[in-house]
Length: 293
Image 1: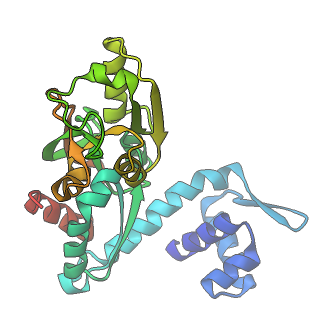
Image 2: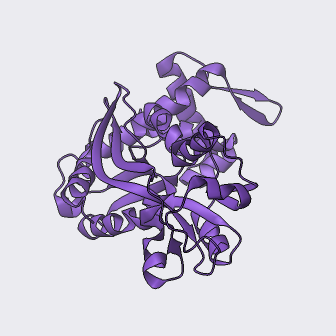
């Protein structure tokens, strides 16, 4: 059945039997036979043909996520009794941008050196989306920068604690403000990561609670863009300290003397029911044994 499910996933992706045949290096008749056998085994119709176009039926749409899980689990089973040197498969990792850019790469490099046959997929996203991604089995593990989710279906490991810092260009008017107070933001341009969760949202709520109205607040989808804008004097920003530590060390950015930083907690998150395949279990062990990286 697994081979037929692989064929079903290919056809569902392109909605074209001929294109799926090319992708899988099968003849089109073989593709049709495999889909027909799968439909007979499941007792449902998976595709509808209207003229030359192919559409998924309702049953076909329901099968897609389950088929992907079964194919993935079958691949993991093949790795169950392999030696470490032979271990292969796929691990899909979700991570907050700051962790993915400034903390995770060393671990990924170490893992690839140990298990070169395991393919790593990385999805950078918003921490607020990670529980749903894990629930839907879109990712195997997530690395988040927020307080614990406190959801019973999730298993979390705390990796390290961190904090946010306000940063400015060395020649910015507030670079020497000691101490730096939030009220000083009222006449400034504030550059923040876009989103409605995590530390950017905590900052907005803090400003609202103190009735501080920032003159200009610009949102960006990239931390690197924010840093470049701050370096060029376009405003100040609040970012995770780990994301700006190197620029502060080099003197390209200045850390403002804020006495009440928003605290961060880096956590590794799995779904409670997730089967830890040998490659995934090895990845978890590597992370936990190197949390000081």
